[in-house]
Amino acid sequence: MYQNVLVVGAGPVGLTVAAELARYGVAVRIIDKAGGRTDKSKALVLWSRVLELIDRMGSSASFVEAGMKATASNIIAGGRQIAHIRLDPVGTPHPYALMLPQSETERLMEQHLNAFGIQVEREVELARFAAESDRVAAILRHPDGHQETVEPAWLIGCDGAHSTVRHGLGMQFEGETLPSSWILADVHLAGVRTPPNEMDMYWHSDGVLALFPITRDRYRVIADVGDTQAGAHPSDPTLEEVQALLDRRGPGGLEASSPIWLAGFVIDERKVGRL
Image (cartoon, rainbow, N blue to C red; front, side, top):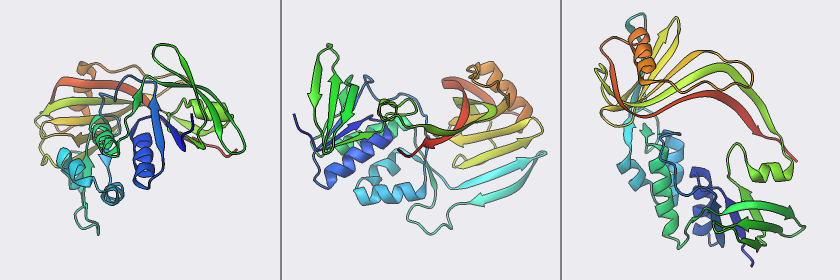
């Protein structure tokens, strides 16, 4: 079976690639081994240039309507505000950071893709592939276990840090993992003193505390929590640990509740090397 392009991975990148190919009339098929879209906030911000490109795709209105516009950022240290950075003077149709959970970004981009008559094929996995001179011979594994052979002219890997496509090509994931450990909390937050459409960065001798609005009372909390051992992954925080960080590094009076997502993470600065 011939397809012009096979996109592997239906996150924001894969969905966008597939939608743009379809917009230009390229036959495309997109698969993902997961059973559905992410339910996490993950990549939270769409910046101005991204929204300008979505304008060109013809679908930015639905993203802007679903998100929350953050128009300024505050830096607070020693109990006082030392900087207030406005985004609205930026020369763009979108002078703000659009706070939009990745779960919503994927939903909206998938709807945009569906308008071209293309559906994401869920629980379909790229088992293996071989690159030929003018095509790719790929084996797909379906949920019932049967395998399908396809021969696209192009195979595009949008399948994340542990990419099957990257591994199959023998390409290195070059770069480094930073030695610091971080925590992330997607929580409801009461007692925030700054306007709900502004981002807050608290500088403390222990480290940074950042608050990013998601909705009027739901925030992304990020903080660094020390160095990590090589190869180790920080544990997910408890709500009590998040509250303790808010109490120590924040302005006082912040109260976290109803956690939606709590995670520990490290920062990888990596990119795929050349063949």
